[in-house]
Amino acid sequence: MYKRVLLDILKKAVKSKKVLLLFGARQVGKTTLVKELISAYPDSRYINCELLQNRAVLNTTNSEKLKFFLGNYKLIVLDEAQSLENIGLILKILYDELPDLQIVVTGSSAFELRNQTSEPLTGRSRQYRLYPLALSELASKMDRIDVQAKLEQILRFGLYPAVFDLPEQEALEELNNITSNYLFKDILIFERIKNADILLNLLRALAMQLGSEVSFNELSRLLGISVHTVKRYIDLLEKTFVIFSLSSYSSNPRKEIAKGRKIYFYDLGVRNMIIQNFNPMSLRADAGALWENFCIAERIKVNEYKRRFLNTYFWRTFAKNEIDYLEEYGGNLYAYEFKYNPKAKSRVPKAFSARYPNADYKVISPDNYFEFIWI
Figure 1: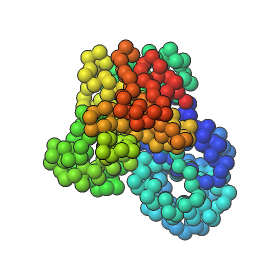
Figure 2: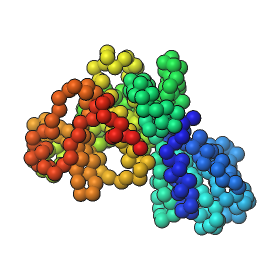
Figure 3: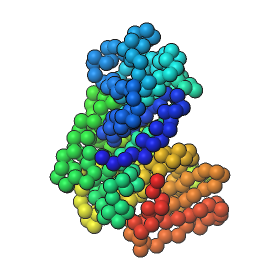
Figure 4: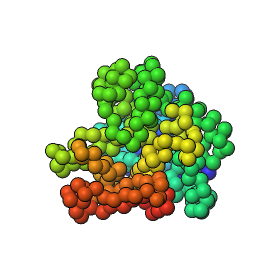
């Protein structure tokens, strides 16, 4: 077990008396995290909402029945609460009727849980995200030299807690289990999508375009489905934390692409399993794309756990000048280019520096990435 950064954040948040909503993909460690959280508190209780007996009791808006079931506990965890019908209303009743009860709710399906809780819990909740292991979370068991030695393994097999640091064959078995049994579970259950092959084919297409701008029209033609269906499935995959996207940054639509989108995977092990490619980095044509995805995904974890709320983009002109990643906060622009080969030359595009002369620019390589993604 690795100490999760979010644990200390949640311990502080418990004092807020808000309903704490913890989102994250299946198998990233939400259950382990909340069980560790409640172990520090007496009079606490863990409830798995996917168990039929718990759903049968909790699926009510009768406050007296809820009080009787929950007893006199001071802190309860409702794990995978998207399984409950009317979860938003249930939480509102608990919040209003049991003011001394601290409630922690987890969900692997943002489109189901967040939609149900957004209105009933207005002003009553705080939201947090848990990801696969962050690189700096490995520091609870190893130093930076050891982490650096694991870098290629991470780029190939990812950072799911159940996968990291396993022997290669065992890592492959575990990744296959995750992608086969968990990746689409919430989409198939709640959206009643019967054909997972379309989702898998879409993910394969996105995986092959890693680091490149995607076209919904091209994906539509390639997969033989409508553009609307492509957009809907991508949205669902984002809301179940399989992929994430960056939109393009533009203050000059005549010269800069204003509506582009690039899509990345939260975990590279999942991405590589989808395309069945675990070759060593020295044999890969996609090493640069893997490095770019890795750095951006790790940066997202850093920003979330530091509670740093900002805008993120990529930048590209019609003349094909581009920058991999931009952050905008405090009225400033911060530009980053990712190079897996530290010796590769890189300089800020003239079009960018002319347009945004005050923007900060850095190249991130395996020689200096710690400062960029360490929490």
